[in-house]
Image 1 (cartoon, rainbow, N blue to C red):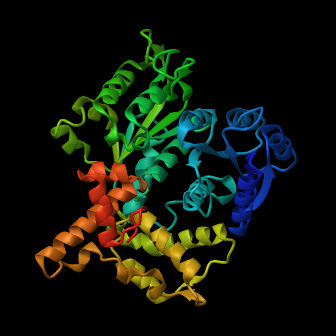
Image 2: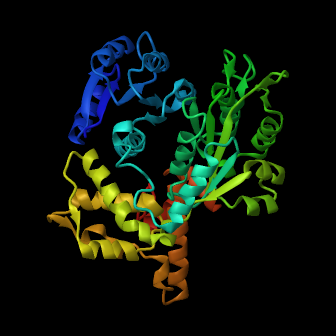
Image 3: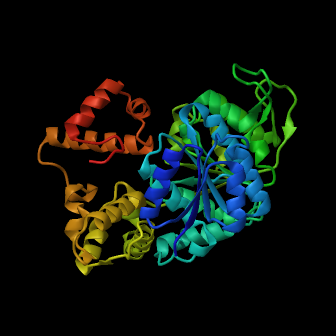
Length: 440
């Protein structure tokens, strides 16, 4: 079925461009130029997802979300914000937004955000079941989720980038006693240390330059609900200390204040880092790790559960085709066999991208092995290159690719992860023909 979208933006050109693009992708799109108009539209035509700018004339996007949620006019919201107004986006997430996108928008980011939010829509729940057709390995993960979800235990979800950690977290939250309460996701790696500290713990008026008013943090805003701290392994020592205190005392002290405030939330965390190694290296507090790892759910990489690939590929292909407003082509038996042999360094995310590229560029009635371009991507199981220089280059290429993917294409962050100057990274990107998103 077609997902119904409402695009809210006071800039006519931007609004028209987005509506046209989303319509071409198969979405049922309506437009509004202001919050009041959006509320009126939603009352007469309920939407599945509202894509709104934060800054609107009169009533802003945050208030629009609060009002629409109060009236039950739409289940999910995505917000758009300029780079300089990330705090407004976080405020929108406290009000109930699913995620935010920075302007100028990248259409592939928009596509991925809509795909993620679409997975949770009731009308799509059956086709989006992340464990449908899963083999024994992932059924064991599902069994663990079913046991853990109704409890109040803090859960640490570990696994490689793209393996599905956020899906596991969402399933835990959906099966919990707090499922109807706020659920706030925070990507710790996406926010600078001072901003992350303020957003998590809140701040007093005048606590720092630009703090024109007091603001509750995410832990307060999630009262009664659940917080997912993604990329928890990337938080600074200072934030680690404050987080440990919150978990120990179940109270939070805003930046610039002395008096603590009680908080009530369930904490889920996720990371692709080896936190035990980081603790041994002195980069992560061991006492905090104990608090986070009351229960650990490791999500295996796709190469360790290749039996899931056929069912997963068919499900992803259906969803991708719907997003593009097309019928899903069949996967030929040889294409399925090729998918089952691949190593997937990019995990489920890589499988999804390869299927989308095959759907868009393929010319035949069904997807064949050549459409998937698997031969162009060396798998780890293929053996070592013939010479030492070739082996070093292959290792370097893979490290750079993964660093870019994990940093969402932010070169400065990837360079820091790799321990090289950004200018050196730019040279390596040209040398290995890797684009900013980490694609070879």
